[in-house]
Each structure stands twice: as C-alpha cells, then as structure tokens.
Length: 511
Image (tube, rainbow, N blue to C red; front, side, top):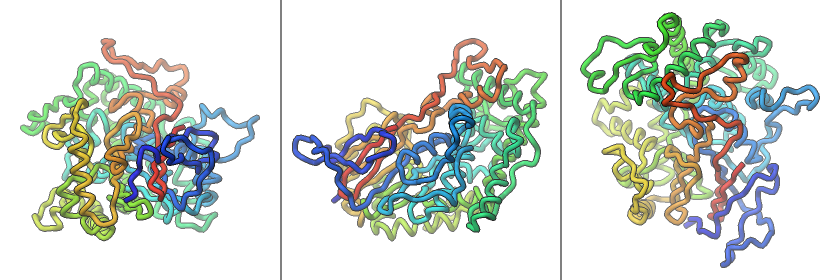
C-alpha cells in the first residue's frame, strides 16, 4: 500500500521553479543525500482557490508544469506586476505547453466564492482542462454545486446559497460579468478574446460562448460596489450574518424566514439616497452572475461536467472535495475505479439545470434519488477530520479533540474494503497548511490558497485591486461604529500545495 511515511514527506520551497523533482531520502535518520531521485510519475494537487485567479495562476506556475503560461513583457514598457493582474498577462491557451509527460495536475474544487475573481479563476482552470484533458482534472466543489442549484427558478432569491451575506459571492465578483469594465475599454473582453483565440488556433476553446452583459460599467457601479462593501461591514459589526441577505429586497416575511431569522436585505443598510440605485444594480448583477453559469453556456456546461471524484491509479489516491463517510465508502465505493466512474456518470446525467434540483432533493426514493444525497455528502462531509464527529449533526468543531486514533481506524478499515484506493485527499476544510494524517492515508489539502479567505475568512472586504481601481476615493475599511475592521488582503499568495509521487511520498510545496 502506497501510504507516505514521515521520512517520505518533505517541504519543497520555491527556488524559481527549478529542481522540483528532488525528493527526500528515506534513510533511517531522515537526512537527504543531496541527490535528485527520478520518480516514475507524479500528481500535483492544488486545493481550494476561492475566487482568487491571481493565486490560481501563481500556484500553477509554481508547479512548473505549464510553459509559456504568461506573456514576456519588456521591463521598460510593461506595467508593474502590482498593477496588472496575472490573468491579464496569460498567453493564449493554444500557446501553453505541458512540460512533464510523467506528471498530472488535480484541482480540488471550490473555484468560486469568497474572493472577487471567481469568473477568471473558473475560466483559467477550464482552459487548462480543455488544453490538457489527459493531464489536468478539476473536480467539483460544494460551492460550485450550490451555484448550479441556485439557477433553478424554484429556489427563491432570498433562499439562494449565493444570497448569504458571507462565505458566498463576493461583491467584487459582480462586475466581472459586464463587457468592457470601466478603465479597460481598450481591452478585449474575455469572450471576445476567446473567440479570436479559437479562430486563430482552430481549437475548440471558446466555443459555445455565452455573452456577458452588453452594457459598460459606469460610475454608478463603482458607487454601488463601495456601498455594498460598507453595508457588509455593518452586518459584521453587529454580528447580523444570519439576519441579512445579499438581495435587492425581501419578500413579505414568511414563517420560514422568521424561523431562520432573516430580517433585512443588504440594501436596507445602504443610505436612502442611494438605495434605489443599489437595488436596481444588485438585481442586474445577480441575474448576470447566474446567467453566466446556466446550462448551455460555456461556463455552465463546464461546471456541470466536473467529476465528483477522481481516482489517480498511479498513486492509489481518491480525490474528493469533502470526504467519504464510512457508510458511503462501504455502500458506494467498494469497487474502486468502477464505483467512482459510476457516481461521476450519475452526476453528469443529472447536473443539467432542468434536473439538478430534483436530483439533490431526492424526490424519488429510488436508488437514483438516493444518489443526490450521496453526491451532496461527498462534497460536504468533514467526518474524516479529527474533531469533526459532531459537525454533521450539530455544526460544531472540537479543536482540542483527541479522536485521531479513532478517526484513522475507521478510515483504514474502510479503505481495506475498497478496491485500489489506499488514500483519500480532500479540500473543503481550511487550515493555514495542508495536513497529512493517518500515516499518509488522509490528506487535507485546503490550505486557504485564496488571499481573501486567508485574510478575512468568510467576510467580504475590498482588496488591493479594488483600492487601485478607486484612486482618490476614500474606500472605508471600518464599520461606522468602529467595531469591525477589514483585515488587510495581502498581495502575495500563501499556503501550500502537494506533489504525490508513485513511490508513495507526499511532497509539500510552498511559494
């Protein structure tokens, strides 16, 4: 069984993306012999990115797997790296080159939410999977699942996952769905660029394009975005996360809303003189956001086709966003790859906008109906982590838990009855670093790679790009009563990713 030992795990610091294939010696004293060992094959894994396209590109660049990723710009005339985001420096996907025929790349899901560049993150990862379909796999995260469910008309606006005033759609995200963003009128839109790239390269990249909204952003959009940030700070200052929804207005109070404590729309916290404008623009923003991911659009179709799980047979590792409970593992994964393929096929059959809502509701208590619950659990389960035994029932986490041995025994017993899977790797549950547990049989790979979730957690705050786009404007970062202050969103990307080698070793890579 290819489980990593302590001696086979090491941290590799960034040295300009060179000599990354040097791995630690497994000698008894744990000291490396300084030689570079050639491994037969490797799987690089990038955890939850949460709406940070700059860090998505930076971490892919860190792996060294894709050459010609970014344009070479003359130093004398190019914009400063601090003012031109990386996603505006990407070469055409047709120019990208895969560098290592023995390596693959897996993304762990949760490309959207919490940060303001979810669209650019999805587009970048999508293009990688299209250009390198046999090398790059991007599994589905629970945030993508909720986005797809929010498209259904039976989900009332106030009940949408994306309506929460925290942890879902960052206000800065909304401007990405309009053509010719203010201040960039000389640049092609992403859709226009995709079309021209496809025409020049003759590839399928850029086909089935769904246009973004036709109007340009204006000063009113800048004002509304600032007001939404300020209103969010008021929510957090008063600990009103559950009482406020990011919607233009609330319907008449229902028993369900009262039970959930929903009392205000975010626009209720905006000064009266700007409230009507904010309502109109927010409604337009939400429509544009959901329309970009509908079935039949390039983004919507791509997200719908993401696998729920991926089994890398060269490292005998199952990649799934949330986790695998003992019940699900025993009942639905015993046949290993065959089981994984069956669940992915069932998901893809039901991920379309017209089928997904009923599938997740388990409308028919048949085997097919039950699979909606299985899919949801695979994307949200946290019970493989020590201290999370009461998460599913009580929503609580015990950071002082000492149930590691119990959790690992359950995992090892489950894996012993699953064909061809020796290790489970998950995202979804964030910490500052990746965690290697259960003698290497469980990898927790969400190390808060996105700068916004690392900086402000689940709350919405402006970052450096927003301040640069608002020169001369005093953008508040503190609530009116001073009880809430936005933490700084750093320019640099932090966290860790991993490389799994077929000799069983787990290598942790840092920036």
